[in-house]
Length: 367
Ligand code: NAD
Image 1 (spheres, rainbow, N blue to C red):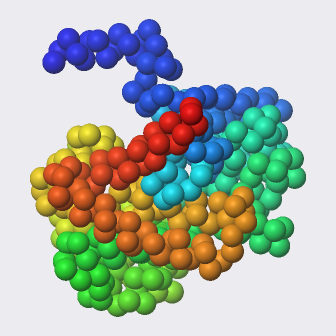
Image 2 (image 1 turned 120 degrees about the vertical axis):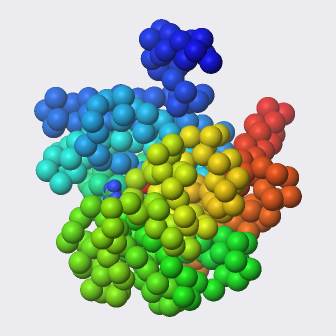
């Protein structure tokens, strides 16, 4: 064990990029730097076997550049499998801009970022993620066509977050059906962590169905606004993971299911929008399963957004967006049942479906 740790540390020193665990066979990583606008961004292109790498841009005040690199690599890998499991002809990519979206995001910075995206000639197509608005994508659109999630008035499919929330709601209902025998959420206690673009719409669906919704966020003003609009209860405790709720919906940032939290979690189902909820899928997936907690794979149930932005490329309309997103219910139930039958985690079961689609396409391409 000690020698394995030493080996890993050595690898870290010798191969700081290709040797990183999160590198995970990425095709290309692009570091974008512009002194004039203060832009520091990283674009990760994980896999383009099924199509161009599509994934949103996140702007976040990372503690250091390693954290940003690790985040973009984990996110772009997730996009590969999200598109594949959803049946879309897209590869996986993602971008991060290092900085505070509230104070450092300027139109010049966004356009400069767009120029870097353009330099990849369509191999990477961007969209919104945390810290981004539809108006930011409109700015990017001024310098490149390789952007989705632009305003409906400019011919785009608009903000993908409400569709993401609908897909998460569908996935959550399927997970409830699997765990509780019914997909009715009326009366279920559901803790939504992060009530931003996706979380708020999810709260809307859940309260309309009569669930007892508890909300948590680092923004007090959001908590008050969402609580007032939907009648949700604000969480005021000190450790939300140990809260005895039926369902925990992580809708803030990733890796909230980690070594510190996993044994505290009292929820019976986990279903939320955040990407990469499991800090280490190989470790934390099996622990959840052993504890009888049903985990709806994040990259499966949060695919509504990508279904929405892909409509701009594939040319389908609102009805197809909604029916494809609604189908997340059937796919989730199928994956949970398969995982149960084959004694693997839901995450593994979803990954297998995604990987097999990519392998099949690769073989077809090589013929
Ligand atoms: P957002 O930035 O609009 O909302 C995130 C919210 O989480 C904010 O209100 C923020 O204050 C809150 N937050 C941040 N840290 C927190 C913490 N430690 N505890 C509680 N709250 C915290 O982002 P969003 O677009 O709603 O996306 C939410 C998550 O869903 C992200 O992980 C994103 O990658 C993922 N996701 C979003 C989409 C989409 O269509 N927007 C699609 C797929 C996945």
